[in-house]
Image 1 (cartoon, rainbow, N blue to C red):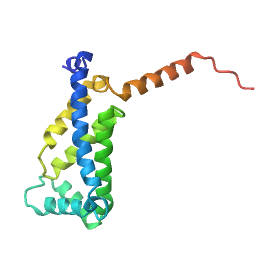
Image 2 (image 1 turned 90 degrees about the vertical axis):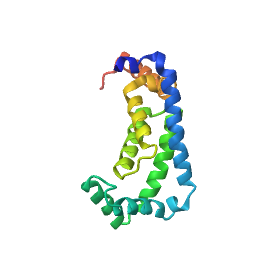
Image 3 (image 1 turned 180 degrees about the vertical axis):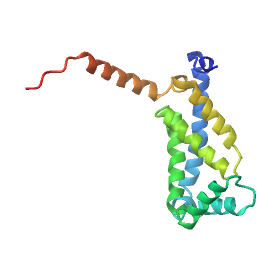
Image 4 (image 1 turned 30 degrees about the horizontal axis):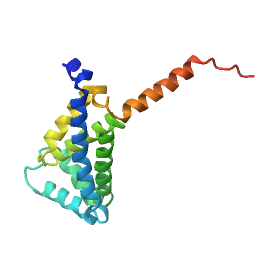
Length: 170
């Protein structure tokens, strides 16, 4: 199954999926970056957390509810909202460009996972599943992207450095 997912012939499909996924994150991040309720006060995130914690049965795991309650009680929404907005934007940009793809997919899946733990479904299950599939696709997911160019360059430099003799120290 992994061989099928990682087949280079599917890299065009994975590139389209990766760019679409990146676009979803970029749009979500841009919306938040332009909203003072996210970037100045964090009140939008505070409202989201308050609703999640206050709605009975919305959060299934008590440890996650306690985690969000702790963030609420400490006033962390003010800085965490900025982190969410910038994180979504940068994740989207990286996925569209195909740079730091594996890291960006892990971040995307982690964010979706947390949104689902907080009781939000929306598009999160689809976005999470696509991120996991792209992670399983391996290098086929970033074959058409900047990662391929960067990794090729880094490997070439490393290979050149290893093939040259190291001069003796005096």
